[in-house]
Amino acid sequence: MEGMMPPFHFLFFSKPSVYIDQNSSVKTFFSRNGILILGFIFILSLIALIAVGLAQNKKLPDNFKYGIVFDAGSSHTSMYIYKWSAEKMNDTGLVYETASCEVKGPGISSYASNLQDIPVYLSKCMGKAKDLIPKYKHQDTPLYLGATAGMRLLRMENEELAKMILSAVTSLFNSYPFNFQGARIISGFEEGAYGWITINYLLGKLEKHNWKNQFLRENETQDTYGALDLGGASTQITFVTSTQISKQFKKTTQFRLYGKNYTVYTYSYLCHGVDQALLRKLALNAKDASPGALMEPCFHPGYERTVLTSSLFSSVCTKIYKNWISSRNLTIQGTGNFQKCKESITELFQNNYCNASYCTFDMIYRPPTEGHFGAFSAYYYAMDFLNLTSDKVSSLDMVTHKMEEFCSTPWSVVNTAFPQVKEKYLSEYCFSGTYVLTLLQKYNLTEYWTQVEFMDKINNKTEAGWTLGYMLNLTNMIPAELPQSKPFSHPTYISLMVIFSLLLAIVFILGSVMFQKSSYFWK
Ligand SMILES: O=c1[nH]cnc2c1ncn2[C@@H]1O[C@H](COP(=O)(O)OP(=O)(O)O)[C@@H](O)[C@H]1O
Ligand SMILES: [Ca+2]
View 1: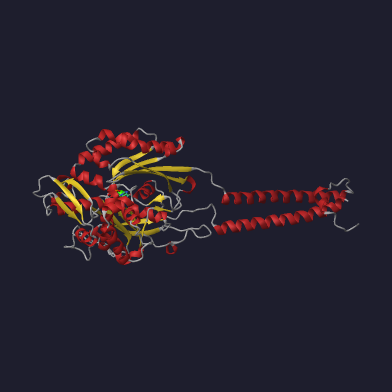
View 2: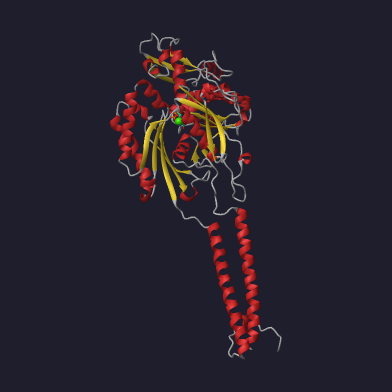
């Protein structure tokens, strides 16, 4: 049996029963110490290997954070609750909308004369936020309210009243356990810029990971989308421009996001929101109306609506049209003519004077548009209802044809076909659809019809709008530089794994050989 290897299990389980002589016991002593040292290295390497593996692939605990933003628009107020993983807060696209709430009632600016009703107005949605967000997170949850063009118009009319509305909101929100960060009127510039951040963040245009989960460099990221927001009282256009723009126009802003610079052009047109545009159009035409009646091509044939003429001139946007007409009832009668509707809408845009190289309308300079656009809010509501989104209808001729057909459909037919749609919205889709087309044409975007994507919820979850961008900015969640996503870079991780695996293999082999040799001395 001399010279033969002991069976495998012997290497590990057999114990020497007798020491043969002095010489062999010294050798055994050294070989046993060697084994101990190797065993020690083996255990250390094993611990290091496990530690590296765990650090790299650690399953992050479900530690979520929340944020609440109220969008106090001109026509209505909505609340959005955003949620994200606390550990990954600087990664893009990880903040999403977990719930939303429509505040019942009109826009907040109409509460100027009944401030005492503001708590009732907002408390239902606040109650929903309290129920949805775990109690122990309330104090860490930032809460914001941003008001847009409805409040901008009220401020122009009566600054004191606008302040009183915001104070009423502030005292109400201070009574809740959330981390209230303020209620304010955001500027049109912010509204445009935050809308642009929201859609590009959600579409993953600001930074990209590759398959190894590394952030891609500047030239490897995708082109951003321009943002088109259409509200009730104002509308915004925002896009990255490569045109050198003179500082005098003050229409651009610089962003540094995830290590990349963006020069963003943005402009907000007050009074060009869809509700104010309709009011301006009606006010403009009211003076030519035959006594008591106004023929209106943007409403369906057979549709009638009676208004008090004073209501047409009460807005800051229509005051300039106010003339000798004393207040009286005016019956608006639909004639359903798309072409005439479009012509009358075109009158709302001024094209007469431009003090720059190029203006879209209303003397506002704008550089040439570039790339794709995401159009949301009232752009989406109108085009989605009319089944005219750019992915459904490929050419502008088809859109025009469908609009002609829709506008000329008698109101009785439309009303019967859509009993579930709010009458205000349904009766105005001919106008709002035509307005969307005219506005896009004024922006020179109808030539690139398929490059305009009408969008509502991005990734089926998060509504496109300024609110998410606002919160991301105020919570510093979009870093200027690229964040490190893992404790080790991928090459370091691979190198460490290889080194420790090799070390383990060497130790194991050496250990086995030494153990085998020492067992000869024991025999
Ligand atoms: O479901 C809908 N169908 C059609 N239009 C809608 C719907 N929901 C909201 N809108 C319209 O979208 C616009 C939203 O404007 P918002 O209230 O945000 O004003 P603002 O951004 O100018 O302050 C309003 O004109 C409103 O009537
Ligand atoms: Ca809005």
